[in-house]
Length: 254
Image (tube, rainbow, N blue to C red):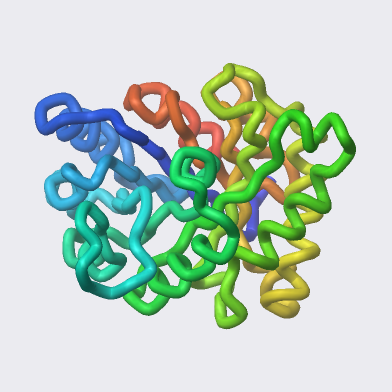
């Protein structure tokens, strides 16, 4: 079956990778990424973005950052601007990841400011949303997602510069995964929200990734859902063979 929007398989390396193992991983992904139908993206730690971009050059694999500051420059010790990421060779940036929201108390307004900054720098923002286990158990999943989307995505966003990643917080790093039907229900809801934000193009063109412990074993069942347009991969992105196996599953559906 063809997937009209095309798949994006994005690897979030989180705080993993130094020059030796990180660049070896980037090169392995680049070697296996040539000629792919799906779009591949790796998001290494900030210390490796430039070197990783050089390592994957010409392979079709893109590089992204894991966060950016809402300001273009200034007295913000330890922070990185979207323009700096672009200068290092990044095309994407992950924003509003649940770990940033929890560890750094980022709220929707902060994520929206960073997303606007990413757009201004010419980057594609991957905006993350997702509910906690307590919120799911309370039946609040869809309302939580709606609130996060409306608060985190700028009014001027488009399907061309914004990707949404649904990452159920209870499934990140736990080995638990939303069953395909659960993922599809939330992805369909996100698409309906984006249709209101982006207009008709959002309904047809916006890409929505699943980000809760996708791995080679469950990727085919998740990716065949109508509104799942790829994955934001955590642990499985740290092994080239696992990451590329997920890409294989995406290619098989295109």
